[in-house]
Figure 1 (cartoon, rainbow, N blue to C red):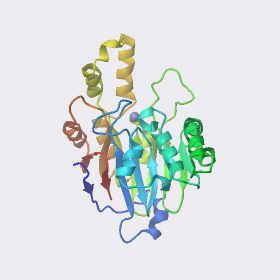
Figure 2 (tube, rainbow, N blue to C red; figure 1 turned 90 degrees about the vertical axis):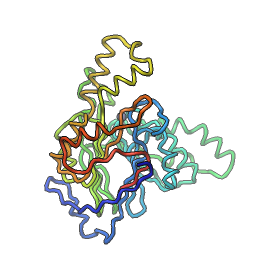
Figure 3 (cartoon, rainbow, N blue to C red; figure 1 turned 180 degrees about the vertical axis):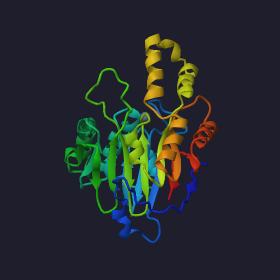
Figure 4 (cartoon, rainbow, N blue to C red; figure 1 turned 30 degrees about the horizontal axis):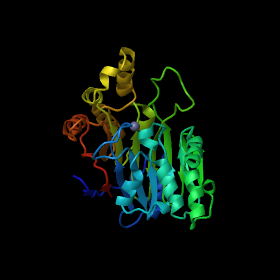
Length: 327
Ligand SMILES: [Zn+2]
């Protein structure tokens, strides 16, 4: 599977639910121009041997758009032979670090590549602050590199963070990007200023791609995903989540209350294989791509989970590897 390219001839589907993929129909290319790359495919804060943290790349007419930037995103972009300097638009789904830990690196390298045009980062509330603090983090290095020679623009000049609202978040000649507020944090007892999480729908001239990101089952994500060619779905296993904590020796260090909350987060804040299958069927998507995989100790086999999805969805189901490419 690794490095596999999956070619699928899907038809542009004009949604009847308010997402205007039809607006692109007249521009539809004779041959597909949209490419999806699953840059990083593992869930959670801990670095894993074979998989980078969550990140997806969508390329349309040679323009690159990054959705989430967990740790390892910059390296995977290099492996995909995408110049970081060319990435001008980044979308963040929420502020867990398996979706943002690679952002400052990605930004710093883009600046270091002598990018002079703005780079815009969109996401839920807190995104503007995230970008400002990432700039602060990179600033000492940037000051030194300006003194080293070859760079002149202060790093603060390049980056713009945007706290987006659900709905149409971004539009240019290649993409329309819609966000729906999902239920990843609904189980939190105490709401914080960062309690907002987005699923995304990306409409291009020849494809509709829905990205659940992290969420419990909810009607807004289902509506957002209607008719998508690709449903890029997180795949969560409550049992695997508990097992890796046991196998790594962490489980016993938690209090009973902490254990209960960990299991509550795993079961209510994420999509199980059954949830993914039911979502895919109800949203009538054409292909399911499973990512944000719950890490396993000494195993990388997700066949059982994919088969569970298939019990609830009749279409193709693919367990993504890092750098898998879909057309
Ligand atoms: Zn996550």
